[in-house]
Length: 463
Image 1 (spheres, rainbow, N blue to C red):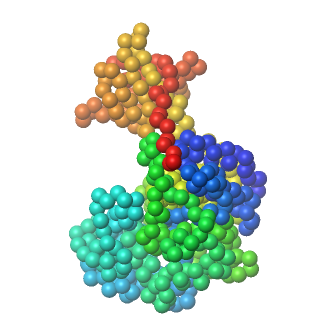
Image 2 (image 1 turned 180 degrees about the horizontal axis):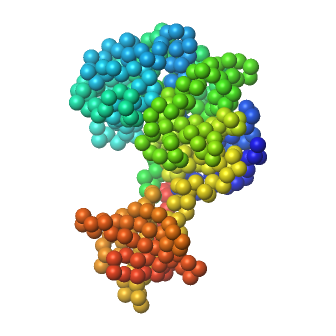
Image 3 (image 1 turned 180 degrees about the vertical axis):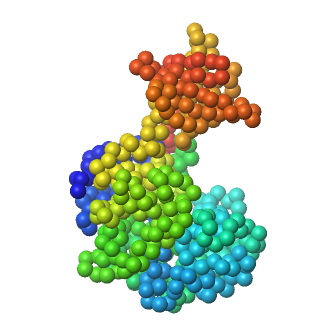
């Protein structure tokens, strides 16, 4: 096994936090069922300058889905649920949209119903961004919200992935109905307790009483604003936990369902959760698929990676594990800015002895950063500026206009090719990089980079 390069990982996390103004992160890396690296980065409370630790609580967002799927799997093992039970066996939904929809389809996001946006509205409301309001506090409220969904179905059950948060809210209700307990109470007794996850919560009363909770921050451009903890995501994304607890969870998953001599779930159930049921709509690594509450990458440098990320906008998270090398990673943060999934896969790369710089997304990020700057034509007749915006470049300049989106297309030799649209026509844009610098060829013009991009505004820290 390759020794995990903790220093390189720490330096990478620190660099990305500094670049994107993430207030804090907590991380844990597991090898052979034990934590080999765990630490907090930055401040869990920027105003109070309080450091984060591996015990600091963060919202884990959609990593919650894997716990709900595991709870369903436990109920399947006890004979109270079948993966192929119709959803209407447990919940009296009258809409035709749910005809033929099984527990399997909700777990794998293959119900045929696209994302409906209810949880997004709940989150926006928690941040006091009231552009819309939905009073969804119960199953009856959700049933009312789903009235009219029949005209929103886009495919037959099982055909393709349409990520549906509302489906996992319904799965939480199925766990509650089948177990006779609230879904989180069932999870706490059957899964969290055997895993000794004593700092994993759902309810506001538990979280507000805790003294080690990361303050959530909304980062909007140059402004960082503390927000309330966003409650209300329920079984789709409502759990809060810490890196220390989640390392126990990852250890159990790596070990085929056992934790410190206790059988938590069968390997058969985990195999079903990790099976690729449908193609994931975003293909980053080749063959990306979705199982039950898990995304599956079947061949990452010869290894199967099982993972899930989560975002509550003010909390982001990521979890990966690779069973055949007995390793995994957990990342939690209290802000958005840099992809937790990319940091997680960078950690997996280090665990496999692979250079994270070879990840396609990392290479693109490096290229876009190299191309940023101010550019000038012959004898400085015209000036243009190129800025990186996400996975694109934005070009603005005299004579050519402002905010022209450049879409990356590929690299060959010393050329990086992009394209944009000129009216309805596709136009090629080329950058040339050599030992003398960078040149831009756009429409009729040849530009040479003359300086750095204009400074970005500094993030406003809370007082």
